Length: 180
Image (cartoon, rainbow, N blue to C red; front, side):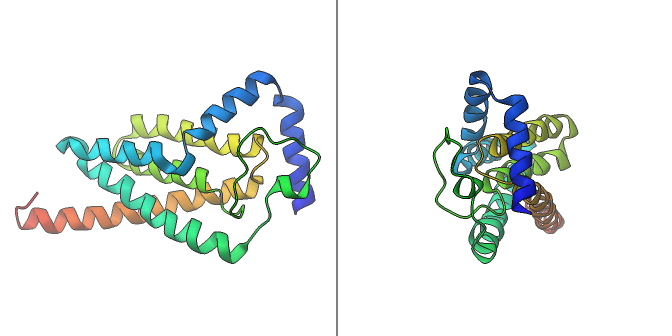
């Protein structure tokens, strides 16, 4: 599988590789470093009553995703990163020190985007485009295999769905008691 995926990474570099793409994808990927952008987004959404439910869902999905993706799955699968397999390519971004599967950057971007999408299709669609660009940046920068990114996106969907169900359940219970 790694050989086939490395060929995909090399193909992407052959068609997209340029100084502009290097700079663009390095910038895009930094939006997801440590999940900070999405954590701040969730906190901002908490401020306003109209978006508070979305903010709770975003933050809850980030917590669920961090535990399942970064703490559990990455360490169980323990997949080597592509740049450690193909050492001929010069990496233009900071080398992550954890395992490759699933992509944590992609996970946090998609769980946040889906959390927004479930409540607001317009803003959620824009967030999903950003999440897809973040996923592509991880492949372009040679720090993840395509299956790492796919798994991050898929896990992001399910963590966002779980967070939405939990948030809706809490809101329904609180609204029955007139506390929301």
